Image (cartoon, rainbow, N blue to C red; front, side, top):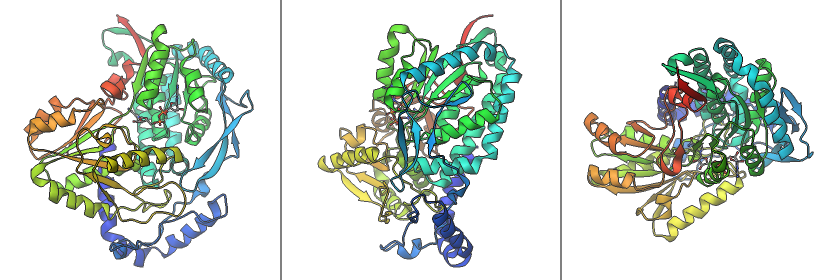
Length: 539
Ligand code: NAD
């Protein structure tokens, strides 16, 4: 599915650019009316949700279009949420809650429970109590629940996509066409493994690990939940999952679907809270494994916490991927790959192609092409189906990105910002590209986790490899060239968990994903991902 999603996206991008005017003048009167209704119906404040306005720049003729808002009426957000423990909704023991916001408006969507260490203990105890029965069931029986969950995700796909975009700020086109279909694909894939694990580990006897604590970030809230739950449940483990504090709503809806799918109580528990809740979970002494996706800094803290106990762990951390474009590449295709590589999900992507390495002979025309393409990107309401770049996930993240952009300016890089208008409220940034970047600059070394591209150059393949590998991270890389032999030569030498060739940001449940160095260790997806959820002995 993922390759399809990626190419659909690129095609949709270019098709939308070409057909913008037609859509505006000929097709959209009903959609406009629907959009207006949706806006007034669904915005909790009663104010219209800010759609994009006509571009005031030279691109305005090209970009004038009618809004095509997905209605938010399909989601039913409760004013407050409890914790999902032992198959029941349980009020937080402290009584404390915290707001989760819509980053496109800055408004509070709901108040969710803040799980205390006592709640963590209750969830781990529930998972422990459920563990023996879940592990003893046949693989086919476990698969039955997982298939149900995957089908429920498909049934409720639109609702999940809208909620993901409302709570996290990502464009509906991405949550609808990429995140949610991939969630279902990961659940189906792992459900398929549940009764075939003897074939995954031939000649070995395998056992579930037991109770797993899983902590996930805000950039792909539902997808990261699926990456975590899928292999753990298939292999007979029970789970306590903690979503990120700024994007808890789809994990809570997933808990409702777990309930509807009829999972036995305690097999899946969902605790909301911030870093303290995550820390309480990963340091709980009765866990048999910890799986964490998030920042390298927190990953290090978790390693320190777990080191004395030797609890098995997998850490999926940050990245600073090189996207390498050779002079013989199909340049227009490469431009789309660079756009997808860095402005997908506002650049809030661990494997984002945030360092563009362009062969020196083509740097000027390539940067010019990129600038032209950037001028067609639309930043705006995540629920607008025309939006390419949605809202920055939180005000805090907006500040972090701005600070790094300022460092790029201070260190002498040249900044180009896409000339698009921004909504007048919410947390938004224009797509940005730095040229005149040197490898020592912070914008070339640190993960910005925002819509900011740093362009560097190289002359030879050796130099491309040296510069691409000149990073503490090692999660992903891209190579653009028409030579198959060069792709293989580069892939052997690039120090990263994934190397994409003439494409970027493709995710597939059958393929292992994970990093080296500061990007962490362990793999998610494929047989490799299953291995982290079993204990093995010789048969
Ligand atoms: P973060 O590390 O701040 O938070 C991640 C999660 O950890 C959140 O749920 C948070 O509440 C929790 N947490 C915070 N402090 C904790 C602690 N001391 N102990 C336990 N849990 C704690 O990261 P983020 O800002 O939410 O996410 C962005 C980061 O995630 C980026 O660095 C990105 O590259 C990385 N990421 C990696 C992958 C991957 O597969 N490698 C995928 C997505 C995101």
